[in-house]
Image: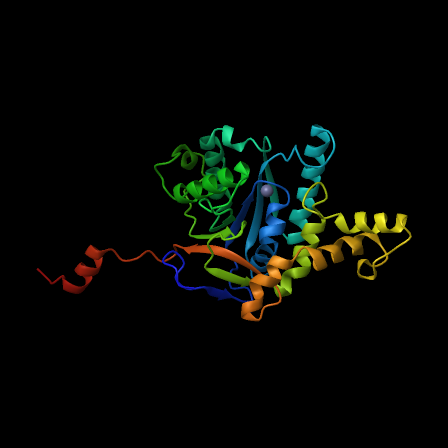
Length: 293
Ligand SMILES: [Zn+2]
């Protein structure tokens, strides 16, 4: 694919050993099911390859779960801890902004909270929504992506929130970014092979029961049983039914993304690497032409 904003598609396959040991990433999402559905495979892969991961959820998910607002907040919170555990995150954070209302909060407040965490946790890499991804109709997604990106840009600057340094929380630059492919047609320049991490992705999706389809398998199993029927692929217990439902019916995008490259399952990302700053035109000229006095 030749696009000016994409250049070439890089294929990211499993790497031997732990090449990322010592590095830290934060996955920043708005809702319980965003990271499991969009990036569960990548997060499991990064952690398997040595990264320490932290999971940050910006909203309280109060609209999702089918119960009262308070009950929804509680069930999503409890399931978020389980999602973090399923994927191997070291810790999970919840910001609890009101669900679906993120475009009416102080984005400066959200950005400042993220900058504090990036510095405190020494985040090298973020995984989040594409801040300029088209087709996004959920304001929680776009606001979260923009704040996560702005915070990544500012986290390394000592002029922003200098009082952090007084408290011992030093500036820390975020050098790598993976932006989700969350809606059809969004830009991507990297295809990540998640085939060996698919079981963890499925485990994280089945923990999403208040939203995200994690319990669809057991619900279908119960519905069919009431009609005196069963599906062999759903197995003989609810947990198996949930996992197999996800595997058979909810991973079409992952199969489609991997197929052209011979991968069983893949996730797509727009990836940005700022680890090696380009030499400025002036520095380059000085290097080549400076002579002794
Ligand atoms: Zn969402």
